[in-house]
Length: 96
Image (cartoon, rainbow, N blue to C red; front, side):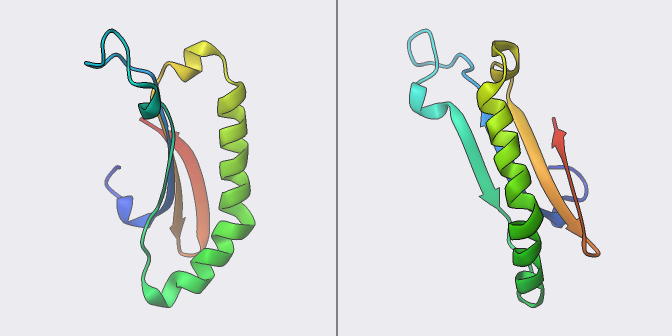
């Protein structure tokens, strides 16, 4: 998650169909999206919730919509996208 993972409030991942020990392919139930909401201090929950609803969730929706429409090359690669909130400032980006 990186050295400043304490600022992550929301994470999304695309689990690509990587070959595993399920015959010659990955079990279909293991492919798709994973969404993680990270814990925040109780004193910051209301403000964080407001930022998530107003900004991060629409951005998450856009990320998922783009992923669904992405070409095969994109979909064959595992992806992670994180939203970080520090000092009231929300940022987001794809990460390895």
